[in-house]
Amino acid sequence: MDPLGEWRFFAPSSVRRVPLRLTLKPPSSPEGAIDGGWWPRSMDPMAEFPAMIAGVTKQVGPVSRVAYNMDAWGDAPRRMVIDGEVVHLDGVSSVDPRTVFVSGFGWQCMTLLVVPPDASDNTAQAALVSAASPGVRGGAEGILFADGFGRAAPEGTVPAPREKSREAGI
Image (cartoon, rainbow, N blue to C red; front, side):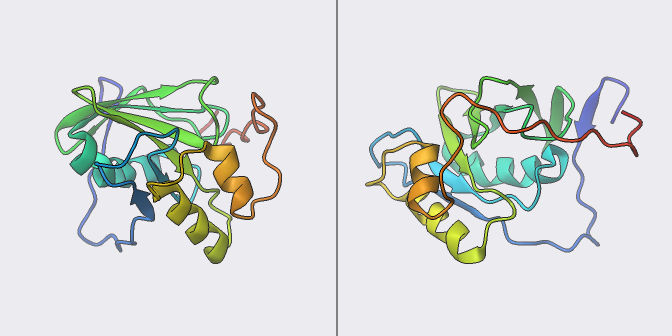
């Protein structure tokens, strides 16, 4: 983190790249509650958000803001710089914990279904396909329930808060 409180993302060339598990509806598809699916490997925003942001840039343009449920994700600074662009990170308790909201500098925005990191390959792939299907217009709970995640939390509930990291001195 720099003195201004921004987190700058630099990936050293020695870092082993892993495929981004992200599916997006085609830009021409009808609008729905979910615009695509994302299967992060953890619920650590600093480890996961940079790649997701890079993955959606083609459809929303340079990303200006990511809103996420602060109780479902780990701690994050208020902003980070990715590829020279400042991205504001808004941890909001009212955002569905099964989604993240991404907006560009214009009016472009999208809501992504967040597939739980511990999901099985088959279940996660089914949810990613459903979330990116132009014919599917339901919300996160409906997609996850239909694709085998069992009964999702009742609408308006939030998962148990994450444990604070002792290593970070929090």
